[in-house]
Length: 379
Image (cartoon, one colour):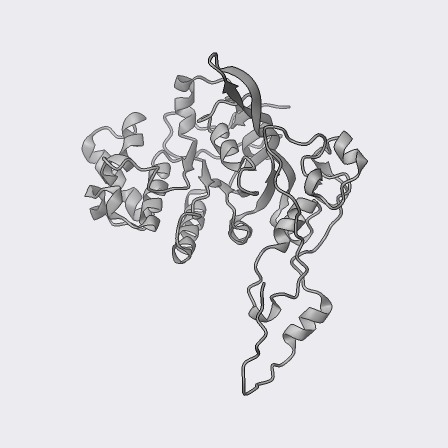
């Protein structure tokens, strides 16, 4: 594996042009990343087990792209995001940023790396210090990293950042509780942009917001990406939003990536049963077409990450499971369908497409009646 050294120096305020590399311009590359949390009991706090939060993840984020990360609650998405930033120390594996292995970096060594990687948290209120004004919140990274020579320069930079995210510089003297949820999330984005990062990790940035505000924040993130050439690792539950913003999509289940590919590959031709089940639950926009698609309903609960199943972690809920699934863990590899999938019996399915009969029925002209139908669409 060849090394890449395209990262800007700590003194650079702007992004430098990346040099060609064997990793195709990958800003972030994660190899076999593992994070286990010990379970301790008793007076002596002995370790009696571990939680397999992240269990051997391989992925990369390329320059200028958005990688969407989706999966059920508790599958390890947020833990993976924090481990990549080394807010949580990994148990094993490798984290490479711009060709540098930062896996064993200490806190002082990580400081210049923080300028290249930033995060926007899920809860915009909990991630902002309620005792600090917006001016201090957004200006704190500039002060810590010495990017402003004096207070006047720092205040000017804060005003510029607030205008960039659609807020007024007059808001700088207010406290977080004086803003709406969408405005607080914009403040979090402004703070993340203060250091001119190359990669933003967006940990469910719109899930805590009203539906009417989500589109505004998503449009803001897209405009910032086009303006500053940012890369995003977009963690979310909402498959519709992920499809809208992502170039590539990775599907995570019980600490592992089970399928990864371009947006069209994953959404139009998913090959892993778990991905197919997720996509079959995506709401259909047209009311006339609702209820016309077969829903894949998974049986049973998600297994405990303390004691995950042997072999394929998804086999206990999979309708394709056979003996080999319990004995051999399927590797994440291309199985002849253009993108990698971790399933012994991977085959493409188009869960978002309606049947031919349903499509014809949906396109047929409607007939007006005097009384409304008593039938209720339960979908």
